[in-house]
Length: 352
Image (tube, rainbow, N blue to C red; front, top):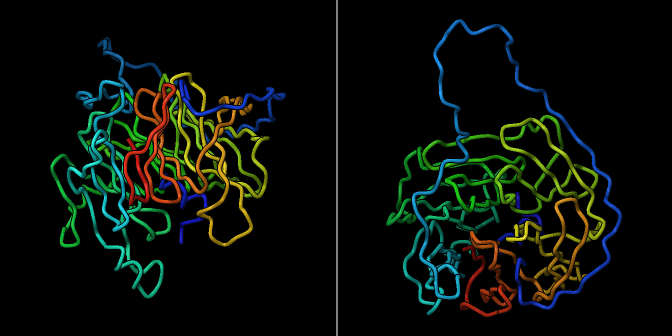
């Protein structure tokens, strides 16, 4: 089974309005760097006088457009998994479900299954920032995760027979690029995929013992991917650069051994945000205390803010200003530009 408490909580401030408690910045944490085997290159001269244009990295393919937004800047719709295990699109202003995107099993199917891995169900979904493709995640088999693409207007039902080209990647969590057609995937590795080109890049994980605890997060210039995960001994912030073979890990002094995280996102400021959960001693993690954590990519804690118990972080919108998440009561909530609010109830996960 792939669902640890941290992975379960993935189902869910440049300018957040939530109260933030500033903290002193500690000394930079220690950093280790792992360099995987670089690709073989040749220094032999090229017998040609033809001049070719530079090749643009495939993960920088631009979006085809943008999603509609409300007057306050929030996306006009959001995606969510409801309590019947259906992935849906919801009107941000009214809370009305616009359409169903994917449902392979119902909540009753899951509850009546002989084992927790006997029936797969939708547990999360995301979309490209122009809405031109949706990425759906199923839990809980295979253990490495299963994700597939759903196009605009398409719908996945228990009777659907998805063509092989719909398969996207192994993984548990995802983060669409805010400005390109690439999606970062995290699980037992980190990689990039797109609906047209498939797998674009990935870690050579022979270098590291790694399991993700969070979704990935993009730097503002798209040159860097971060993810929180374990290397077999501790949970750290891992940094990678698409197209290179260098991976580094940074200790997080504000995260103790018993604590775990939900989600990871990048603010418009360039700082990173995650939810830190502290086990309260009960087997039921739904009421574990939560703090929003704002920190630098170098690991230093910047601020903390209030979050409802048991909340699961969904991430930021493409502008990096609006945070979306789901609390333990199934209410979708948002924070940003000095405001907070709720978007409806009866959900397990939400993303912009």
